[in-house]
Image (tube, rainbow, N blue to C red; front, side, top):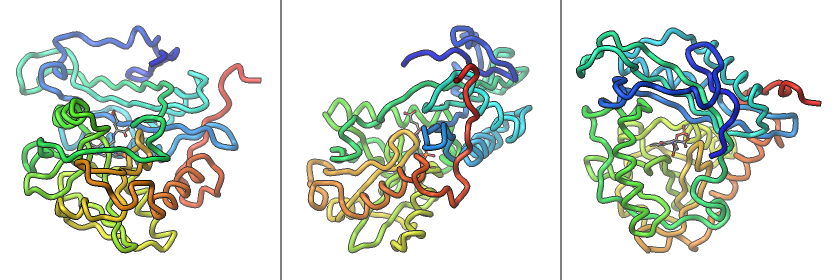
Length: 311
Ligand code: PPE
């Protein structure tokens, strides 16, 4: 990762190297953080942040679920992210907002632990490897289940949830797979360690509902909307594990992973073993939109003004 110049902290811009917290901050012992991940794309008319309001809303929703008080409004945080990208003079980047419980009292019950808000960004390339988008990835079903209902809330994008994601991702990596797919506590398909999942059979797309312990992905919502727009039938439904093996196409969605085809699961070839036609259509629609090559008819792109000092 190449550091950028500035990080936003509690209302002001500070140097990258100064964005630090005390080791006894509540978040370090107890995992009390919520965060986001957004991409800013270089479009034909300059840099633009994709679905800024939806991501910022989910950030505040995550904080609300965990009773973390936040002093900033959605508008203020959105504005700060635009300014962050502009100040760092980036054409395209990944933005990582983080809200955490800071240094103060000790103990699980947060007492006098101030909320710290950070917004950082950096250049981030392809998530599951350079070949992933075109050729697809080889993945496995994880031996780790996704977090069960009434344990940790999966509608919150909380730091602590990613201990579960780490187990899934590390196991997959150690066994030579690009990613792992987790089942929920009922044994139904949930999601990847950092992506939502879509399954295509006989021209119809299926994706697990929010009740299957998934993160309500913004890219998931994007693909649902694009499928509707293209007239491709899509249902949100509980999906049994074996449906993956007999699918015509399976793909992941996520801010980092974008729309990534899956070519094998547990060494069983999916469909033709290559990116399928529906995946390709959705991928094309997705990239045309985020790169500003088609009209932004859903109002999902927030332009970032020219960087300071630009010619
Ligand atoms: N599920 C999980 C568990 C998840 O972490 C992500 C995003 C998604 C689904 C897709 O959500 P969305 O980005 O809103 O479409 N994972 C982020 C974290 C990646 C990381 O390694 O850090 C991301 O894609 O930015």
